[in-house]
Image 1 (cartoon, rainbow, N blue to C red):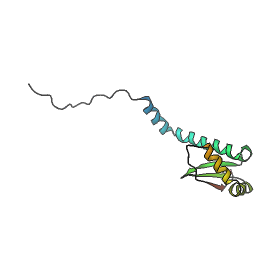
Image 2: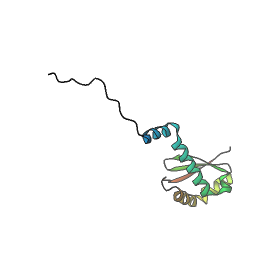
Image 3: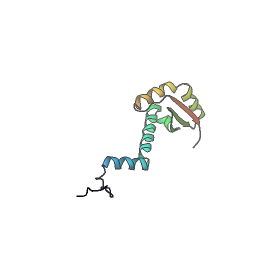
Image 4: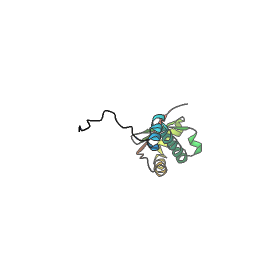
Length: 110
């Protein structure tokens, strides 16, 4: 009696887990980044207030530094000089899972 040789065809794998499929879809579509950005924008708006949020917009979070564009020079100076510490504390309290080390303000117009 002959022993069977190595198998040439590979058996078909079973069904793929739904969580694996969804994680790939979210990664491909960039939904994770969109929801993270929305979370940042909402935290910024609650920290700075609705009145000043209209004159600012969040550019992004890079290496723990939150970059914010301000379209008023007076507001930019006020945020950078007088309110930076308070804003950092409010953002850290609102974003427990995100480490924010500093705030950077840029002048801009949109």
